[in-house]
Amino acid sequence: MSTPLRMPGPSQDQPRGNPDVRLSVEQASYAYAPNPSQAPLFTLEALSFQAKPGEIVSILGPNASGKSTLLKLISGALEPLSGRIFLNGFATGSLPPKVRAQRIALVQQESRLLFPSRVLEFVLQGRHAHGRGLRFVSDEDIAIATNALAQVGASHLADRWMDKISGGEKQRVILARALAQQPILLLLDEPTLHLDIGAQVDLLESLRRLAAENRYTVLVVTHELNLTGEYAEQVVLLQKGKCLRVGPPATVFQRDLLEHVFQAPLTVEMTSSGRPRVTLFSKT
Amino acid sequence: MRPLTMSRVFLRCGLLAVILFLAMVIALKLGAVQVSLYGLGRDLIRVLLHQSSAISTDYGMIVVDIRLPRILLAVLVGASLSVAGTSFQALLRNPLADPYVLGISSGAAVGSIVALMIENQLAFSAEYAGLITPLGAFIGAAVTITAVYFLGRREGQIDSTTLLLGGVITASFLSAVIMFLMSTLAGSNLRGASYWMMGSLSSLPPRSLLYLLGVGFVIAAGAIYTTASDLNLLLAGEKEAMHLGVDVPRVRIVVYLAASILTGLAVSVSGAIGYVGLLVPHAMRMIFGADHRMLLPASALGGAIGLVIADTLARTVVAPSELPVGAVTALVGAPFFIYLLRRRLG
Image (cartoon, rainbow over all chains, first blue to last red; front, side, top):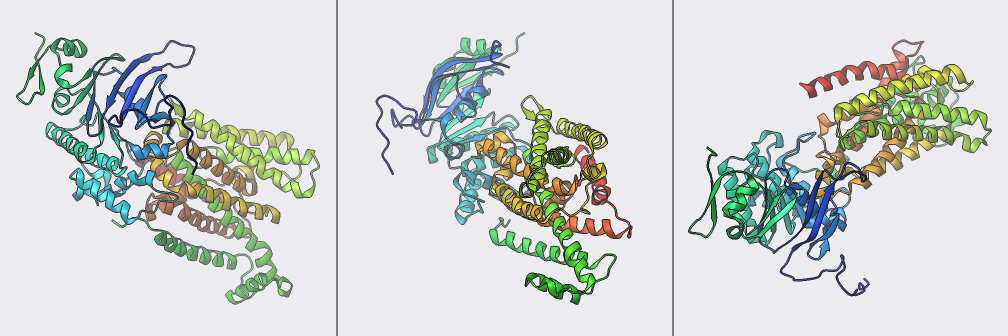
């Protein structure tokens, strides 16, 4: 193995910066345009924030605020128009798909399967990036997948068919598949969307526990104010493609700001644990 | 749950290979001239030992020179079309995709006819002449799948219904092109339009082409098989596969090219035989499941078995006359297609 040349200044292939910072979004922006000659339909203006290992970051905003675009930039599915996004010092967009999948796992709203598979087989898909060739599963793969199911409390589902389990169970299985990737960054796109309130709390409790135990950096895209207030260490507040505020919930959750962003009358109070709680009331 | 292992794949494929062997033996026996099993075995062993001259009887000649090459052709064409069908179904995320339904076979047929016409115009030396037709068929198949793929896209995603409609219309258009070429420019050795549109195994290709078909199948099917575990993830969609670590553009190009080669090779020697690439992968999926590490080899063997049986029926049921084998596969395949379509919509 040859040693890489030391280049002066930051290079996108060199680990750099503060070792406490895992994810670093630096002035990243994006614009959707039907074709290059036309004005963009949607713009995500340059924004920056950093996230540490073990931290839960909530990307909060109403519909069409640019949350999902930001998630796509961070996951490497889209290249930023300007700026950079680094994971442990590597630009996420330039990682080969296999390496990226070993470091970043994405939990999306469930997609329909063409042919149904069993839950354990589905979770084993998370081992794809760690295998080679035809990827016949090893005992280690089975152990990791079984453990992932146990971590989300879904061990009893292993032999069930994916199309025969409930929405909340499916959400947990999809999370287990992401855990089986053994990532360092876990991205979740509206994970609570189809869950009842009990399942929402269950999910976020397990995310908090997983982030603490496995030192994952967890990014959750959501519009749930109270879940963000209760569980996030950091909030990135977006509105119409602009980042309005980055910081802990206690400082971001201000009545005027949230009323402006979400276009709804509300109050914010601090609970004894130092977490903000939001109450909506009717406009009349 | 027991995950798939290499030894299980081998075991099941071994079973299918035994069934294929039995189907081939029966196909060798059946026909206008009856052959005894003993005579069959004796003559085949002589062929293997390079003692063909020792085969004196007429029926031995029939079996070795006429039936055997035709059965081997059915094996290769059936396997090629089934593997191509399985691949298109995974890539396009559409269980109804099939080289024939999507018009890819018709595209390969047009490519073959154009290649034959060019071949007639330019006098190639004998060694290269045999390569022109399969090359033309491959180009025809590759161009058609590219066209159908873009016809089937809406807002950057493959839309199943649009894709199928695009394929059906493309097939119909290309059939008209075949008719046009046949009625205006038909040369002496272009075969009939029905040969290209229905498919038939009745005219044996030159031996060199049969070898090319065999080698091409091994290379193209082998290339597809290296992506088997990627194809499993692609069933969930391209974006999801990418996030799980699949190099989607690379897999897509490898599989499209290899499946076009398989379709082109098959069509250049047998015309557009329909529904094999639809029926066989579905039957295999029902038996063995949707894992491509098992499904691809099972489809290859199942396609070989299916086409050997279909071709034996084609040349025996209306003997001494003969049906095009594509008519037999369409008689079974088209109703099955309707059944799958109804089930999906229902």
